[in-house]
Image 1 (spheres, one colour):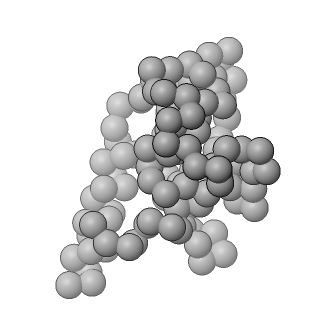
Image 2: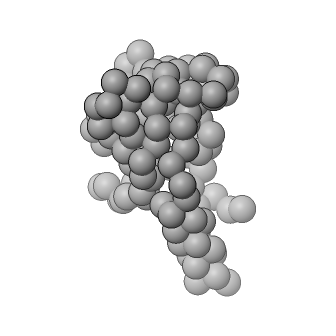
Amino acid sequence: MKSGIVYFAFFIILMFSCAPSKNVSNASAGNGISAETSGRERDGLTFENAIIVKSVDEEYNWIAANYPGAKIESQALVKHNGKPYDVLTFVTKDGETKTAHFDVSKFFGKGF
């Protein structure tokens, strides 16, 4: 049973990593972003300053709120110090490539 969950999680991650680029300019800035993810204390530039989220939607909402018009290039699940993180690479509307780190430990692996 546990291996089935691992395969399912891998499949979901694979789908996100192979999905076409998503333009986040139409996302509602601030919609669904908790106080933890507001970016006031965390900028997402490193694992240590990762944005704490409760869903994948919050990741996209954070990018839309902080980098309006950005286009997602890739998304990867990474383990750092035993904790799961989503690392999203995106291009800003000014053409600058950036990376944002999101702490997904509040929901990743908690069941589907």
